[in-house]
Length: 427
Ligand code: ZN
Image 1 (cartoon, helix red, strand yellow):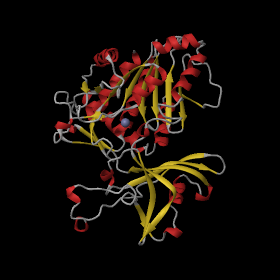
Image 2 (spheres, rainbow, N blue to C red):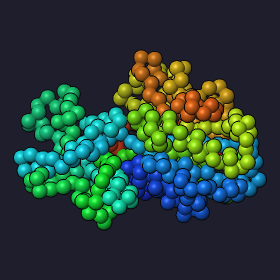
Image 3 (cartoon, rainbow, N blue to C red):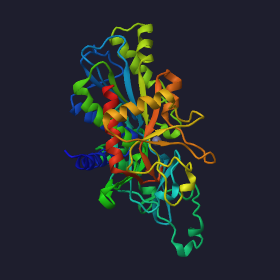
Image 4 (cartoon, rainbow, N blue to C red):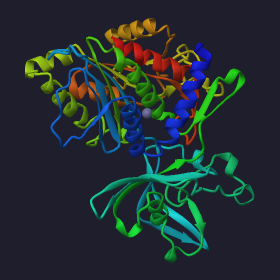
């Protein structure tokens, strides 16, 4: 397939993955579903795991998934190449006693999750999605279609709206989802019905609000791709695509995808990058290869973590927010992220390795560094590097509208990221 049509096909496939992933729990299951379809074996953390050489595996922990393929000739010191990404996105999470309302409107009680651009959530049709823990012990996924909306106050009633909109994080963020009396309605019932269960069976829930619109390709020469949750499902998707391709030709390296949850909250959870999930998988993987403690550390000393998360493209209306010289732009390739204060883990050796992987993929790359007067974000790279000591490079694709309900990426960058990920998995 010519690169252009391959890039378009990649973007449309990403739109499918995003639509199937309204919550981190759905994203982890979608990763597992795609990989199982490609011949990966799903493992359960409570089971004994089989011998690994020649196998390909995926394990899901809450809203996170880790998958890997083991060469037939793998030994106790075969290194791992981990592509790290995250499944969660900023937005809103359902509170306890979630059915509220007044003045004839039904509303949902939500908490702010992470750091969304609040105003970007106005006037969009929104889904409710997540997992339900049931009285019979099952945990099921559930997702509605378009159900909610956060309607903006009309300009006639807020003449100052265009002078700088300020939304109250409590009173300004509670979406409507119907008409009637809250006493006789139940938003959990709406969610439960989509999973074929009765609301009375629900003992617990983790449910988020997600943009309902599908990702679209648009712009001159189909350069743009707009979608919810590009941060960081764009990287999760690139990793899945690359791992499926790499799994057929593994040799000398164990390619691995680690899609963590809770990055938007700082990664500190049992399924986040600061938690033990990756280490737990690595310990069991190397035990299955017969590694003793020293051999496992030798393997990890030769390993890499390519931490992929979205970064900032220069914005034509706000170019002064960027470094005056280093100004990555959509469509010119994935970015290498650099920060003197270790907000990104990239160092000289990592930059050189990234250049090699890009070169072998035939992909151009850009750099990102902050303007000194604008605080830099961070991501999973420094966290896993600190936790595990694996050499780490922070990379990603440039986007605009980061943390908006609908973000903007470049079609060619999405495809190029998957090609570099493929080269990374090949060593
Ligand atoms: Zn992110």
